Amino acid sequence: MFVKILGLALEAGLFAFAATAAAGTATAAPPREVPLWPNGAPGAKGKAEADRPVLWIHEAPAAKANGAAIVICPGGGYEGLALDHEGHEVAEWFNTFGVTAAVLRYRLGAQYHHPIPLMDARRAVRTLRANAKAWGLDPKRIGIMGFSAGGHLAATAATQFEPGSADATDPVERASSRPDFAILCYPVITMTDPFTHAGSRLHLLGEQPSPALVNALSAEKRVTKDTPPVFLFHTSNDDTVPVENSLMFFTALRAVGAPVEMHIYRDGPHGIGMNRLPSAATWPGLARDWMQHLGLLG
Image (cartoon, rainbow, N blue to C red):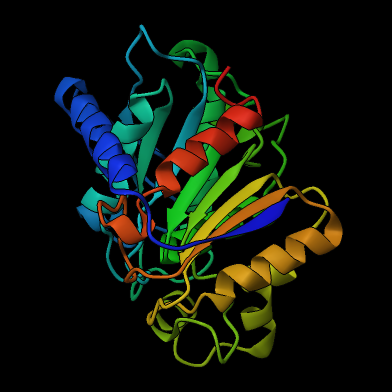
């Protein structure tokens, strides 16, 4: 476990990353859409696209596939979804080093408050794990990733997971929803003042959430020794989601001995996604190295 404070990234590293991402995008197969509940999602309030949570699965090329997989939760303040730069582009990058990536379209406020987004995230992890054999995945190397509010959803899924129900008639529900690892990018972590992102709290919890609900959805308060390994990155001058969110989560994880690695960059606006700006361009390579070190890449 360590914290690494980084300043400006080298231009050479930036250009190398951009070339790798471009090469992966050029050869990537189109994603396939998998509904989380083929017969309709529980709690759905209609039949529009927004009422239908899905995974868009970007399969790793057969020649590179190593069995690892990850659910990606784009950000958007629990109001919208940044599906491209915090979703499909990220999935294509994972494919370049053999990881199958599934972009999650989860349900959002104002129609869908907690616990619906968490229900969708848990089901996404279970869907990959339940289909691991058929899809060539390792059920013990399935993670979750999130950006901004999607980072809050991923952190919640990593701290409030459920075991599978052995007697469930639905085979997906027999699988555990615990991610084997989590990657959180400039995440919303806390629902408490003064460091929460007010828009995320409003759209997830409503206008006047109870103190108990605020505490229950503050991920730093739900950490245990069973929380899976976590990779965090943030920028210190993020003026939308304060860096204190990542610092609080790191501190909580470290206090219980849960594995965690964090990188704080000096400069960079909120919402940079895969980022081709020199100020924080090294985070994708650091995340990949972290996965390699944990043995997640086979």
